[in-house]
Length: 105
Image (cartoon, rainbow, N blue to C red; front, top):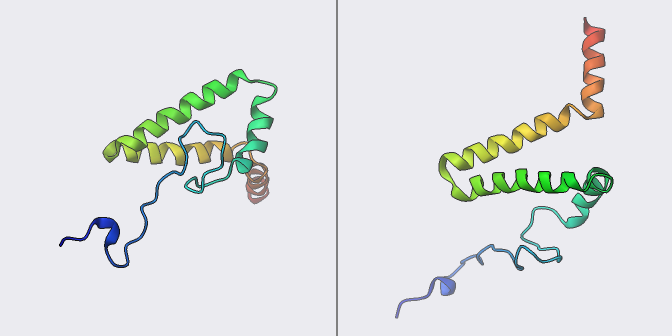
């Protein structure tokens, strides 16, 4: 008798979301809890809710690329790192590093 995949010895449970994406519940499958995002979203979108739709659209395009895999996955990954680079330009660390660079000069 063949064992089912779930009956294999030492098999790990499949990682998958516990909820459908439209739920308001935190999901242990997510890399971050909602509370990690909430202060950022409130600062960015409370006064400008129209920016929330633009942001969601950009993130969804990245999501679609990641889901397709292959070269699109690499483009999605590159784009996420590029967002980190862009966010850095708004950070206090960026301003401090520029001041340090000026001192160097």
